[in-house]
Amino acid sequence: MSNELAGFIKLSPGLHGTPCRDIVLTGENYQTPDFRTPDATDSVLTGAYVPFGTPTQPGQVISGSNKCGGSILAFDPSNAQATLRMHAWGFRNPIGIAFNRRTGDLYMAMNGFDIRGSRPIDDEWDATYRIRPGVWYGSPDFTAALDPVTDPRFEPPDAFQAPVFVNGQPQGKVLRFVIDHAASGLAPPSKSLIAGLHPFQSSPSMLDVAPQSWRGLAGNLFIAEFGDLRPPTNPLVTGHVGFRIARLDPSTGQVESFVRNLQVGPASEQGARGQGLERVFDVEFGPDGAMYIVDYGEVQIDLSRIAQGMAPYVEIPRTGVIWRVTRAARVSGLPLYRVTIQNLTTGQPFSPGVIATHTDQATVFRVGQQASEGIRRIAEDGDPVVALSETRGIPGVFDVVKIGHPIHRVGGPGPSSATFSIEARDGVSRLSLATMLICTNDGFTGLDAVPLPTGFDPVVFHADGYDAGTEANDELSSHIVDPCGTIGPVAFPPDGNARTATIGVIAHHPNITGVGNLFPAQHAWSNPVARITVQRVR
Image 1 (cartoon, one colour):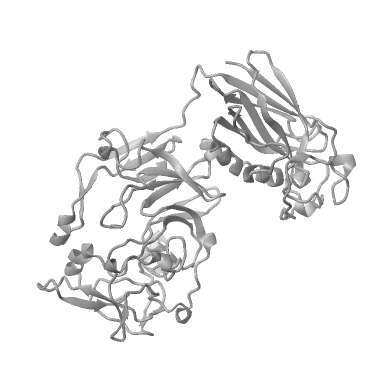
Image 2 (cartoon, rainbow, N blue to C red):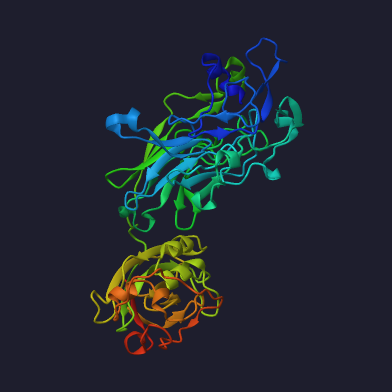
């Protein structure tokens, strides 16, 4: 237990954690300074899920309750008491939850352990979780990354640990489970529950899901990282983490900065009080499509308050801010290019994909080299989400545009060409793009770092079909994405888009040979498969 809780316990001596279902304890008790007496040297044994100063026994059963802590609860607002139930539990410090309204997925931001109190844990991460009904997420015996706390890497130095006693016998200073998982019927939580990991002590708080108006970022999670509260929460390290709005792509688990100060930390410590982020706590998208950020304001740490029974944090009045973030309009004056992709095939629809402008040192794909994960996802699944994120992170890339819809085959059920706009600037002289040949295992077409026009006359490029080298060309309908059977020339039943992985390099595609369920007469092509016109319009 942390000294910061002393004031609360004095007001409510029976305060203790409550599980959502019956659990069996291992009987771990921690010798802790007893703040209830005037003698500063007094100590007391205290166990888990019981009031402060109460020891526990091995095999002791703690009754569960539907009004439990470290949980997400659900209820019918018209009859809350009668319908209150646990939705998920076993969280150390859950802060915010958010639904993806399009998919129904539920996410939660969670703070990992601290190096303080009777049972300090040197955690590695904070986390954002996918929430599954009825699941136990592991606290207090598993870390934010769902690893067992008994792993030696989570044990802080002995100077920070309390002596452990079981049945009155000393066990030394050791980090062990407080719940008997087998006797409690609890299984270790699955790593698949992790949507993304944040830096340890960054304190992910409230979060929201980007709406469709945010185009290539739609469906991404945006999480307010309140920032570390060191040294009270972690005296072992210095420096700051958090203090930003983080973006999390649920399809990849990648977490990166979206809004932050020039340096990590609050603006007030950078000589910019009132001109940047302090303690961001909430982020939400409004009905106007803008992102709104609730900034708690300046928080100072005063360790002397602990001796007075108060938390060591001082909130400075009138420093809070609500920030509004909008998608920037295209900056006038930058070179603007119109890119028109025309499908020349009668049997190969093109999938959503990616277009990028970049320097001549950057590359999105290269014939003769292994495909990146983003190109693999396009070539096998027709899914550009990973490629969009991946391409934005390539040094030298300037602008990235999503091909957001299929480009139909000639004679197909929709348009066989599409036009997009993309910007460049001085030093950005190349254009690349990639889109799947839908009726293939891992075929795609695109341009690899072609030169942007220097004048305003249109320039035409012809693109061949390529093989990503990541999946066997067995041409089985069960290994082909479903849109092939709906917008391709031959109907196929829905399937799971299975794959037989290979390790190869990008090469010219051998075309459809008829070894599986694809038909050369309907699905094969003659190169080039696409005519791509690029014209500078500004």
